[in-house]
Image 1 (cartoon, rainbow, N blue to C red):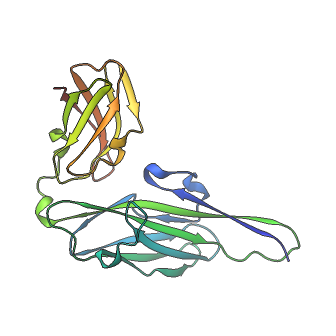
Image 2 (cartoon, helix red, strand yellow; image 1 turned 120 degrees about the vertical axis):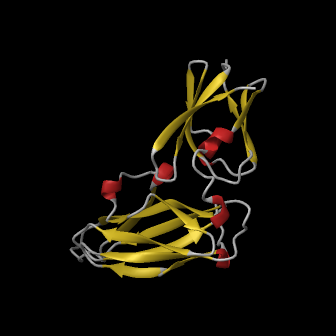
Length: 224
């Protein structure tokens, strides 16, 4: 009986740990913006020449089951070679005053290898993308909401405050000739704040972020 080794890797969005080319299964979306109390769909595409199993589930940022707040179906399926299946995300009972963040996970289940008496290495990639559940009343004011981020100086750098009901995806911050990436603002939650260390911040900071579509944009904010 050959030995089987399965390596599970996280892929997708800012949590990429394996090149997408290594995954047999890919998703049609890099993120999902879902209106609260409604549904949306994501295609799981099998680009390989073999049939793969697939397991899908959603979780909170803390890795917990959201229960009936957000459901994905089917949770378990198979995807024929060069074909796709449709996952359906359904939102129930989310708050109506701010966005809620969840994650959709899709785990590959590789086909059983032929028994040739040799040890085999199987790569099973797990793809993880953000799912933002947004109340219907918040869609109209979302565009450009990053302009409302408030910035002030601290003894060690800059303090950022998000007074809005939206999640922001900040990729880099530039001030005083220094650029900082991978900060706490990568997933900047509604009604929250965070400190970022800057040796000598200037009177303004350039914030580079991702829009709903995934397109990168930049704005310059004053430092109070």
